[in-house]
Image (spheres, one colour):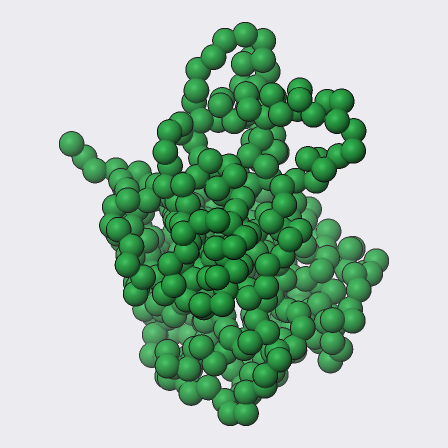
Length: 391
C-alpha cells in the first residue's frame, strides 16, 4: 500500500496545490456499514493494456489497496495514465464478477427519507410567509424556463433567476445543472438511480423522468420512493428509446463503468439533438485526493473502475459528438471526506469517526480554491451537450 502517494491535480495552474448537499443519493458518502454477507474469494481480474480514456499505453502503478468499506477479498491496483492523468483500475474486475463487488448491504438498497424530502425551508413552523415564498418560487422557476410575464414580481424573479442559489431553491434544492430550462414536457433519464431519491426530486421539479437500475431490490425501492418508471437493467441492456431524452444523468455511476467511450456513445444515442448528459463522479485531481493519497475514500475499490480528469473526459466526449458546455467541481462534504480518509489511514473504522476541528481546517484547503475558481473539489460536475443537427 502506498500510503500518502500523491495524485496529480487537474486544474489550470498545475503547480498550485490547489454545497450544499444535493438532494440525491449520489453524493452520499460511499463508505459506511459493513456488508451483511462477506465474500470468501477474490473477484477475477483482467489485464488492462491501455488507458480506457485516451488509449495511451504509458501509465504507472499508483497504488494497491483493499476494500476498506465492505471487505471484498483481494488487493486492487490503480494506475495513472501519463498522457491524460486518468486513474483507472488495472488489472480490472472481470465483467462477470462485477456483481460480487456489490454486497447485500450496499447503500442503494435502502431509501433515505432525508434525501427524499424537499429543502428544509418547506418544513418551517412559521407559515406567515409561506404563500409569498411559494409565489416567488413559481415566478423564478418561470423565468428560468423562459416563460414571459409582466410586473414587478417578474422583474424581481428575473434578477433572482440569474443567481445559482436562487435557481436551485426555486426548484426545491435540485442542483443547477439538472434544472429544466424550457417550458412544456421535458424528458429525463437517470442511469443507476439507486433508491430513487434524485428521481423524486427531478419529478417534483417538473421533469418527466425515468430511471434505470440493474439491482432488482434497489429498483423496487426507487419506484416506491419516486413513483417513476424504473427499468431493470444496465445502460446497454435496458430497452430505451433512442433520440428521446432531453437530459440523461449519471450520478456517481460513471466511475463504476469500465468503458468510458462506449458509455458516452450510448448517452449520445439516447439524447435528442441539443440534449444534455450530466455526469457527476469523484475528482482524482482534488485537494483531498492529493492529501489523503491511497486513503482517499472515493477510490472505493473494487467498485470504482475509471476516474478521468475533467480535461480528459472533455476530450473524449468531443470525439463522440458532444460539446462540454459546463465543467466545475464541488467540495462536497469535504470535512467528512477528510475525516474518513484520516480514519482509513490510521486503520480505524469510519463508522466511529466524527468530524473534528482538524478535518474542518483541512476542508478549507479544498473549499477556498474551489470558491476562487480552481477545479480541485472532490466531485466533478460535467455537462455534455449533444451537437445540434445542421439543417
